[in-house]
Image 1: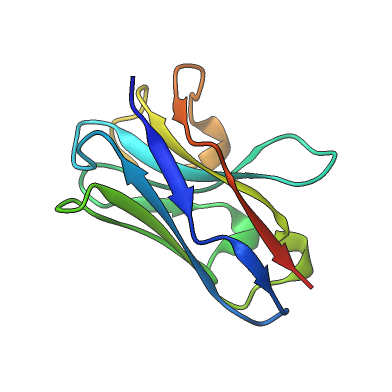
Image 2 (image 1 turned 30 degrees about the horizontal axis):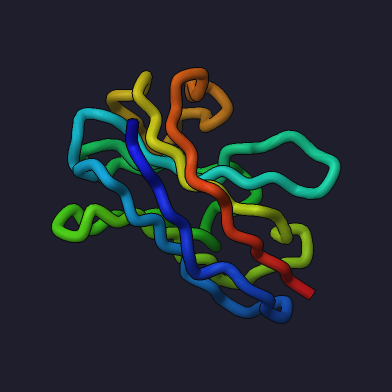
Length: 129
């Protein structure tokens, strides 16, 4: 069982930036994908960004050109750099280790990821006002 611990959430004004981190108990350069999801109040969890073992990434349309997903394999840590934050980005952000995912391209629809057997972190709150 993979353990994931998120950090870096907080409150920020619109237009500001935050960087989320996710420390993983497994190698981030393993043969699977890692991703960030978020859940807004009263809504279902949605994919934000994902990255495969080769560093290829895909993003949800609302965050393209504002958010950047990356990983440091030496530290087994996943990151999400969030710039130009908007109030609608307010949500709990979750890190995910997705077993049924091998390769991504920039055109991969993040909604197509199979998270039925994913491992999840506990989440970190991001509030933009």
